[in-house]
Image (cartoon, rainbow, N blue to C red; front, side, top):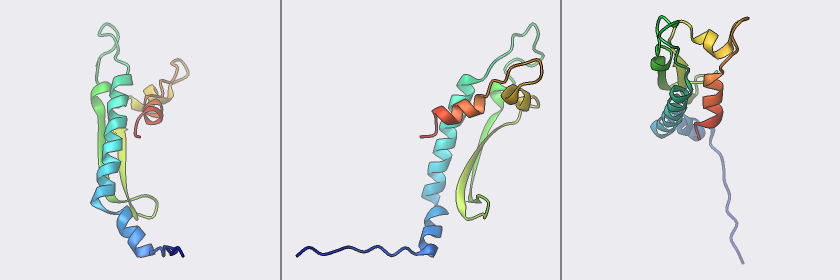
Length: 111
């Protein structure tokens, strides 16, 4: 006769797991993969018409915390671009098509 196994979830234990250093490290690893992909996909303007060629590509950052999320109850990592024109590169303008660099990087990387 086979024994049956049972699992009893502990909300406190799951919370500790979601805030653990190991989960934070994994989130940061995934964020760094996304950052690397975003850097590779980043457009670099020609020096003839772009006053800051390469600024967008060099402005990618990552950070992580164990107290993130809507309820501050889990480890999260964030990828962002600090270039002043990052929003317009990502979403475009009425004259320039959007590049969706971060969107494409997140779809391709982070696994």
